[in-house]
Image (cartoon, rainbow, N blue to C red):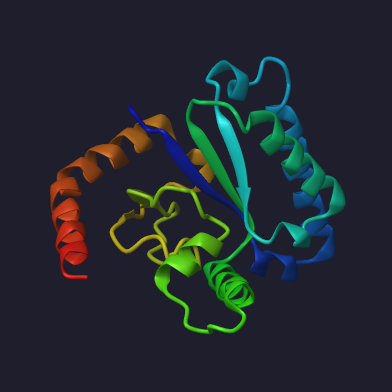
Length: 194
């Protein structure tokens, strides 16, 4: 289908407020899934895919952070599709991080522009999403990619994540194709007026 970049929201910073046993179980699951991706017969190797973990990774357990770093290091030179996993992430934390990092860079000159913030986002280097799919019929973004989604087509199909299938993905791409020209035109007009 020509999809080269996929970003998934795996774990919000807000989720750390959950029961500690539940959080630990999710950290263990994340580590197990990362380790599974790194096996010899992995899809990452088959498709020469690159994986990135985006977010405040210092909040993760040591074992999860080390597995994530290993996955990024092992796939950094891969040339195929890119999977970005937002973990220990919220947009508000990302924007705050970008402002703080930009201020540290500028020190004396405290004037910050959009380019400074873009450069210091956790998602720096990622392409802006064409589509955000919010499963379960939810109509809110849940603090996900707010900075990056000004020209993104938001969809909210009814199935929950585990039931979201290839059929649903194909429908999402077809829906996006219907509005692609309009979004491209809007983005072009905005950039022209800057």
